[in-house]
Structure formats: C-alpha cells, structure tokens
Amino acid sequence: MENTKTHTEAPITLTAGAIKQLRILQEQKHVPEGYGLRVGIKGGGCSGFSYVLGFDNKKEGDDTFLIEGITVYMEKAHGLYLLGMEIDWLDGLSNRGFIFNNPNASETCGCGTSFSA
Image (cartoon, rainbow, N blue to C red; front, top):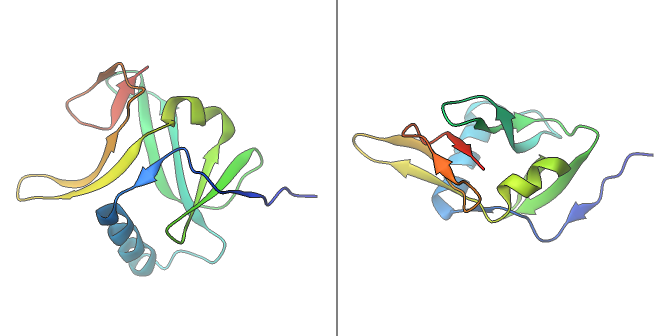
C-alpha cells in the first residue's frame, strides 16, 4: 500500500513570485495530472551539490507537502540539506530565474544553483 500522507509543515517555503511562476510553468508545459514540484539536491555543481527543481511524479521514499496549492515532492534524505530554504523568483533585466536561499549552505557558487553544506 502506497503512503500518500501529505505533511502539513513543509521544510521549504515558496515566495509569492515563485508560486506565480510555477503556476505559469504548470500551465505552459501542460504538466500531467498527478505530477508535483520536485525539490531536491544532486551531487555536482561548482560547490558540491546542485539543486533539483522541476515537475515529476511521486517516487517511493518521497515526502509530500502542499504549499499554496502546489504539491511538492522531496526525498526524505534531502530534508536535512533543504530545511528552512526559501525558493524565490527573480525577474530582473540582467537576471531571471529561480533563486535558492538556503541557510544550510556553508558556501555557494556565483551561479546560485550549487552549494556545499
């Protein structure tokens, strides 16, 4: 039997700008029913870890969170590295994209998408 429990308190936050952009992307990319936003990390990048952010289906071992109507999937083991992180959307003239404000990062790279813990 699959565990479909949704946790009430997410370890991350999404700003209003990030939520708005994610909803636009869901609509533009025709994200399939049952998919959610995958937030995680993977080895690599300039500083050791890179962030994962994209729409995906639920996998075994994922925790599920609901943030402002957006289903978020995260591997349980990634919570340690992402606890307290804020994901924001930057829409400026010279920079545009998601930014990760992670209090667990001991060092970040200029690209803004990799860190070390």
